[in-house]
Amino acid sequence: MPTLYIVEQGAALRVKHQQFHVLQQQQLLFKIPVTQVENIILFGLTA
Image (cartoon, rainbow, N blue to C red; front, side, top):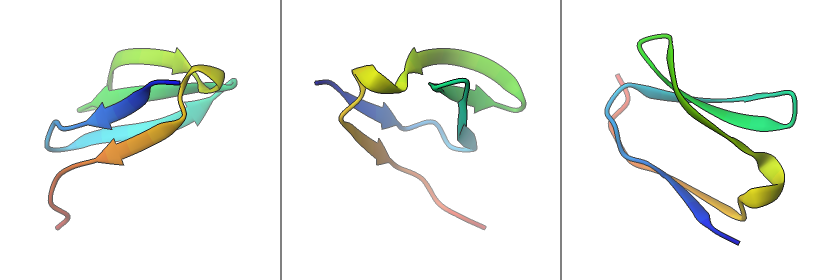
């Protein structure tokens, strides 16, 4: 199973309809079914 890496500053990860949605400034960058992801790694700073 693949690992999902989120490396863009300010990106958001949501779950909707059994899919992970990755958004940047409220725009959908991509989506992937949750069944295809084993690990999630998030990079970035929080305010």
